[in-house]
Image (cartoon, rainbow, N blue to C red):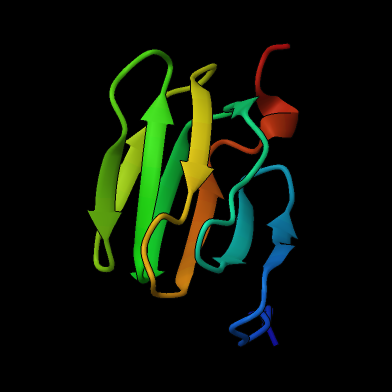
Length: 107
């Protein structure tokens, strides 16, 4: 077989899981409940956030907070300060694709 299969957890509970991390790409899967958030951090690569369920609230650098609904793909540049949260009543589920892999980005 040439292909590889990767699995992710299907849940309504908070989860942050690394699905793939190789030299080409890093892919993470996250689920956040109401009022849950990630710690403030800086993007360590070019980030593509794919919202598959709910709404993600983002505050990038010093910008106003913006909300993006399921079906959205948001591109966040390298070295951007990120505040990611779920301010809606619904479960938030999203994937984070980092390309190239943070292993290949300058420090």
